[in-house]
Amino acid sequence: MNTALNLLHLLTPESILVETILVVLIAGLFKATAQKRNMLLSLTLIGGVTAGAMLIFQPHYGNIANGMAVLDPLTRFIKVVVLGLSLITAVYAVQSNIRQHFAEYLALILFTAIGMMLLAGTENLLMIFIALEMVSIPLYLLAGFLKQSSASAEASLKYFLVGGVSAAFLLFGISLIYGTTGATSLRDLAQSAPAVTRDPLFLAGLVMAIVGFGFKVAAVPFHLWAPDVYEGAPTSSAALIASGSKVAGFLILAKFLAIGLAGAAGSAASSQLQPGWLPLLAVIAAISIVVGNLAALSQSNVKRILAYSAIAQSGYMLLGLSATGGTALISVLFYVVVYALTALGAFGVVLHVEQRRGGSQLHHFEGLHQSAPGLALCMGVFMISLAGIPPLAGFFGKFYLFAGALGSASQGGNLGLLWVVAIAITFNAVSLYYYLIVLKHVFVTPATHPAEPVTRRNAATFVTGLLAVSVFAIGLYPGVLLDPLRAAAQAANRKPVTAAPVQPK
Image 1 (cartoon, helix red, strand yellow):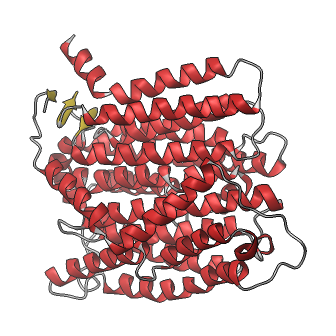
Image 2 (cartoon, helix red, strand yellow):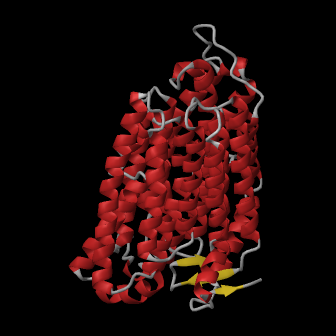
Image 3 (cartoon, rainbow, N blue to C red):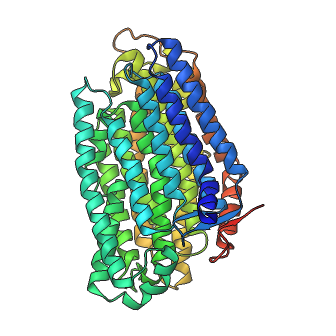
C-alpha cells in the first residue's frame, strides 16, 4: 500500500492531466461554437498549469520500483519544459484549421504531454518503451487529424509505419540487452554492461536500440519520415513533434547511454577508436549534419526547411552526446531546450501565414515585413538563432556543444572528436544559406500579388512574440537557463541511488 501511495504522490501531475483530459472530453460533447473552443483551451491551460504547480510541491527525490518511476531536480525541470511546450501547442491549435473534434485534439496533446513526462521520469528499460509509445501513438493521430486532407493522412500513415518499425527495433534491442545483462533498471545495467561489452548479442542489442532511438529523434539514416510529416501534418502537430518530443527523446537517450551504458561507451577519438556506442553516435551525428543541411538547400516549403533543419539539429545534439565529461549532458539539454523554443516559435509564425495566405511555401512569406512587421521580426529572431549567429540563444547552444566536444578530446590528449566538430562548423556555415533565403522572402522580396495582412491580436501571436523575446533574452543572458539547468543536473547527480521511495522537502 505504501508503494502505491508513493507512486500516486510521485505521479500527481500526470494524474491531474488525466483528469483534465476527461473534463475536456466531457465539455467537448456540447455543440461546437467559437466560444466553446476558447473554453476548452481555458480548461486545458488550467489543468496544465495546476499540474505544473504540483511539480513544485513534490519531493526532491523519489524512486519507485528500482527506477520504474523516478524524480529528481533535473527530471522535474524537463517535465516543466515539456508540459509548457505542450500547452503552447494547445494555444496554437485554437488558431489552426482544426474545426471538428477540437476537444479530442486537445486531449491528444495532453496525452502526449503525459507520455513525455513519464518518459522523462523513468530509468527502466520497459517503462522507457511504454512511455515512448505513449508519446508516439497520440502523435500519429495528431499528424493525421485533418481527415479531409490527403497530405495529413499520408503524413500520419508514414509516421505510423516508420514508428512501428522503430518500436520493433527498440524492443528487440532491449530484449537482447536484458538477455545478456539480466537488468532492466538503467543503474543495474550500468553494473552489468562492462562484463558483456564483447558479447555479440549485447552489441547487436545496443545497435538496435540506438536505431530505435534514431528513428524517434529523426537522425540520418532514420530520418525519411520527418519532411513529409512536418509538411503534411497540421502545423500545431508538427510544432509539438519538433519541440516537445525532441526534448523528451534526447533526455531519455542521454539517460540510456550515460547512465545505463557508460561502461560500453568505447571511444570515438580519431586515433583511439574503440567499439561501443560513442563511435556509432559520432558517425550518425556527422551524417545527420551533412545530409540535413544539404537537403534543406533545395527546399521551397518552409515546413520542409524546418524539417531538414531539425535533422541537422539532431546531428548537433548527437555530437554533444558523443562528448564525455561532466558538462556534456548540460550542454545537450541546454541546446535541445533552446532549439525547442525556437522551433516552436518558427512553427507559430508559419501557422499564422498559413491561416491568412493559404500555404507555407516561400512565396507565401513575401512582403511579410510590411503586412506583419511583428511576426517578421519574430521569424528573423528564430531563423538567426537556428543558424547559430550571436547574440541569440542558438549561438551559445552550439558554442557549448562544440566546446564540450573539443574539451572532451583534449582530456584524452588527442584530436578526439575534432573531425566531427570540423564537419559541424563547416555545414553550420552552409545552413546560413537556407535560413537567409527564408529571411530574404520575409524582409526583401516584395509580394508578387496582394496579400492579406497576417497579424491578428490573439493568444497565439502573443505566445509567438513571447518565444522570440525568450530566445533573445537567453542569448543575452545564457545563465537564465543554464544556471538552473546546471544546478538541477548537479543535484540529480548527488541523489542517493537506493533512496527511500519518497524524500519530502
